[in-house]
Image (cartoon, rainbow, N blue to C red; front, side, top):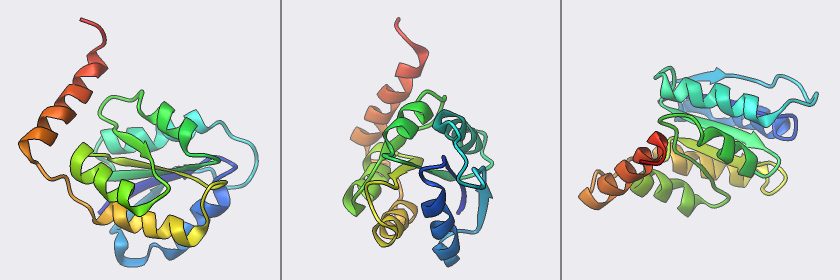
Length: 149
């Protein structure tokens, strides 16, 4: 699985740690930045990761910011992106299995590196169930992208 990963300045250290510890969990990585701890706006990183996923350059994405909340809000504005903030392994795999989450958002100020890596592995190891009820619900989420009728 090819992933896109990015972080703002608050998530930079955790992103670097994850990159060093992903190992064979991924086939390739698109690192969209940031590449140091100088301030950067998380919506720019969310756009870069989300665009990598929506364009097919990456299968899934990971964004690390201070809380994971702003990154998820920004990423979910992009067509085809289904982003969720997860700070536990259950939400990480269930978000993929039931909700077809394709971008994982993590809060570097909320969780530590070991838990973050467990969450990433749960996210990357999960597959969408394709059960009718979940397909129907995800279709309704994606319909929201078209705006009010």
